[in-house]
Image (cartoon, helix red, strand yellow):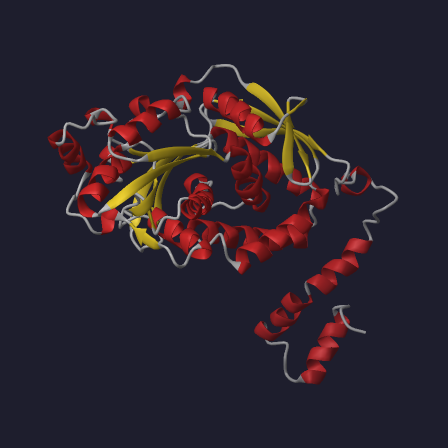
Length: 418
């Protein structure tokens, strides 16, 4: 009986090459597995391509609901943002894809899992760690780490020599990853950070901001316990809600990020990311947290969110630390419920008001007018205690300190001791 290998299959250039390459270099049957996390794909065509290039079977696993609820929402609730810009579109999907691959490998009694991640990228780490978390016994095959092919041009040549149709136009050979949450672009002019991105030919989900409508649009998002549940008053499931906001945000050119980032393997790379719906949700969620969380909780949560982003980006989703941070974040989200109104205009997002039954904003206290809950006179004692270290240091620096007795006397005369 032939060895069986499960391949993470997208139907793109890399995986189209990998099927015949595996057959030529391994005595094996190839089971192609497509994991639907919301990417725009013609699955019938992709399945046919897998079979035509040598796979014995091809499955499509629709895990969009699980992706949103178990991977995207935790990142959103944490406000997890990698290096101040990246909303982790690819990073959140890879661990789920790895988990699905293991499920199919078990069902098919496969001895190995193959993927098309390159030896320079982050995805090899994410796939490998995800597979290792559930199936440490399975062999992991990553052709980019072993074959002699060195570029996308050589991949195209490889297919042409075997009369296999190339699944892309040579003039549009960006390396892309897309799912429900985002689209990423790498390669071509982006490989030189000095070049301006060619948005006119690159963008798929979003219009260039200068070509967005001249009139702003308002959008309202409602949250319950940190999870978005409605747009403009219409209740929606997670998948439909993200699609809706992608359409609205994309039309106004919001959510485009051009980032030179630090990869897990140590090098820097440049990518352009389109995340219109996600950018709206992150902005709205943070506005609601400003309203509903106290200062200390919000401050600590910022640190936890940054750590969460680093964990997700680095492929360490299935770890105790990620689970612990998520548990902390969930505890902070119990009161993060309410509505946020945003204004979208030519690539920008701005707040247009927020409300919550758990709002910590109290007009009686915050108003410039004196209210019953706040006495202006109380501020004097607070400031003296709050600033005591400043005052003591000032005594020292200005030569008041001749000894403890002198310092005590100066402090008493200043009205801060007693």
